[in-house]
Image (cartoon, rainbow, N blue to C red; front, side):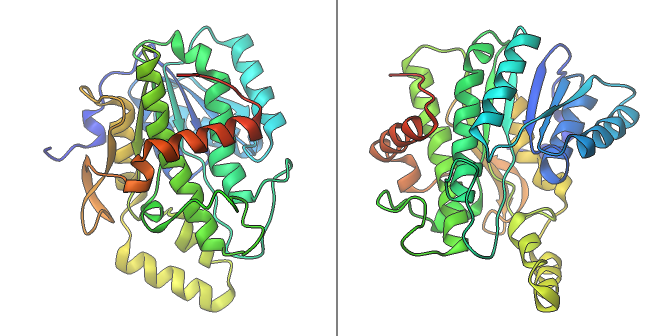
Length: 309
């Protein structure tokens, strides 16, 4: 495809979009561009005070677009449920859900409030539960889409169903990679089930390559002076601006002609940077048996049941 930029985003007037993790980085760019092109944007964030500051900035930059803030902590299934319940009370439909939020912790193993390993519980299970609970509103949307944010990290990852929570052997980088592989598997499996159910919703995927806001180099900044040097050197040599890194998910969310199951990322430098193009997930991510198994586990752990196809 020819170089696609934010200027190519179709008019989003009348569309309601929810973006998780929209306080900074890729989520902030995504929210700003959607608002700039007319969407009513909901920032789903853990820190609502910071969210209100961001919302005011977006309104000022986009000539008073409709931007609201709602509290959402993906590391808490109670918070996910409360967010979805409020959305059901306040909205008649959702047209776009961008599952953008994510975290990486390069340190000791941590858990969510529901006792899940923090990466898997937040990055995957939180978004799995959120999407399931918002599905009725999405079904009523206008050409509704769900965008799942993957990562280059999924390519070297593997899901060990005997130790999904990394209780036996802890490896922070592997845990993060597994959570992003789970995001990828979920986006693909969601597409299979939506199509089988005859749903109007399409599930697409994107990854940003390596952008200035990429979680892994940012995580190194917490490793003292040496970590800061590593993060700085990595950013200088490998990353692209956040605005460029957000383009694949903006393309997946808005471009005309996109169909369910498509995956978008940068077109150059081993998908580390460049313009949006269609890319491929790994064989494990595309394996229907793995998708089915992860889906069943996720339903059991979150107590969210949907799309039995």
